[in-house]
Length: 165
Ligand SMILES: CC(C)(COP(=O)(O)OP(=O)(O)OC[C@H]1O[C@@H](n2cnc3c(N)ncnc32)[C@H](O)[C@@H]1OP(=O)(O)O)[C@@H](O)C(=O)NCCC(=O)NCCS
Figure 1 (tube, rainbow, N blue to C red):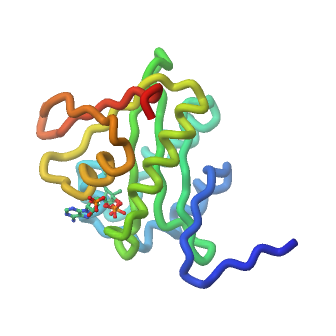
Figure 2 (cartoon, rainbow, N blue to C red):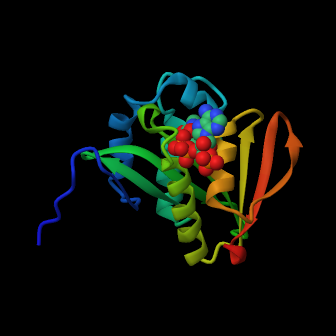
């Protein structure tokens, strides 16, 4: 049966292998400010080193994500990447500019944390630039058991044990 989706509706779904090719299209809606908040550098577009890291992590089974899609375009994603010991993972998220501030980041973080928990990841760590209130808000709203673990190198550090979500 065909699923009818209202125009403008944002849907969440698991990452698919071909999404990496669709990030170029998504990048059109991402400002340098947003890229700077995500990567620490105001890149003109999503950097190639990051795409390579996704490809490698996806192939090795150490990286996964949830995607937000609207009218066939990726408008946000939240991800985790396992460390070498596979005992913990780094959490990160990005929502395209036009879709920020409407609760999408919170939904994505919540969803990807559930995916990580289902994959038996014990703990997620997150680092965000000091003053990034939207990221702090999304983390706290999505993960009520989130713990703040301190500020280092201009970044707020957080941890969440997934047994508690
Ligand atoms: C961080 C990010 C993913 C959050 O997604 P979002 O859809 O904008 O966030 P939400 O709408 O879910 O908002 C989350 C909370 O932060 C608050 N918030 C949102 N934007 C805010 C802003 N600019 N200033 C202060 N608070 C803000 C919201 O009110 C909400 O709080 P509430 O639940 O108490 O109402 C998104 O803003 C983004 O992509 N930023 C650039 C990249 C980045 O910073 N990534 C995080 C580092 S990995």
